[in-house]
Image (cartoon, rainbow, N blue to C red; front, top):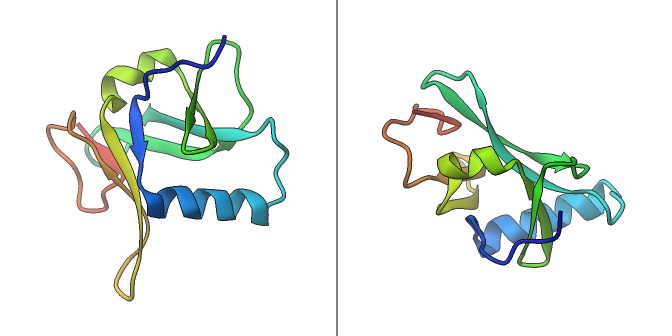
Length: 113
């Protein structure tokens, strides 16, 4: 499937910079992209999936800030409009999911309903 023009998610500058750094640090080949999705589980019902992966047959592909992003089309309804940020501070370090579709989120910020 070809790359899709409409971007379902937004990567902040901080998230984009960190993802590019991680990919370079891990010396991942060009065909590896960022998988964004959801899976069942977590304290609120669904958990986010974020990691480097190969493109699967049914995936939609997006180019977001120079990063190949893969997503299963059925996950779009949960993720459309979501912003992924990266925070690095003394009290917290990691990726943050700001999802306008979530009715409820957990304290850890990695699961939602």
